[in-house]
Image 1: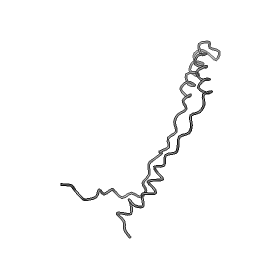
Image 2: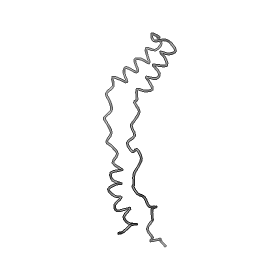
Image 3: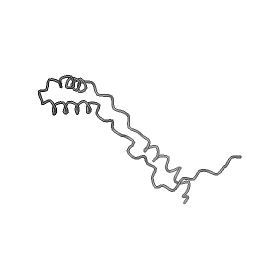
Image 4: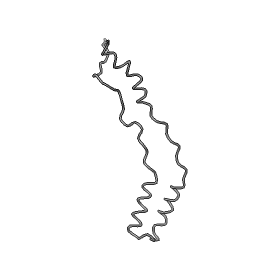
Length: 91
């Protein structure tokens, strides 16, 4: 036997997802921190740092990835909230 009562949500003022468009960290950040650590330990002219410096140059010269499309979940929640929230409050 199935229950035919609809599921009731608690009353909400606004349906919203917090920070859906999180920015990706820079991929060269880890390599740059390795270069800085190498310079701090071996000095600025450290000969052992050339491989890490070349990796940083290659990372910085690489083409940037295409930007991602923004997340539209808050737009759709706002658009559909009239149907969802108004079920409990009818004037």
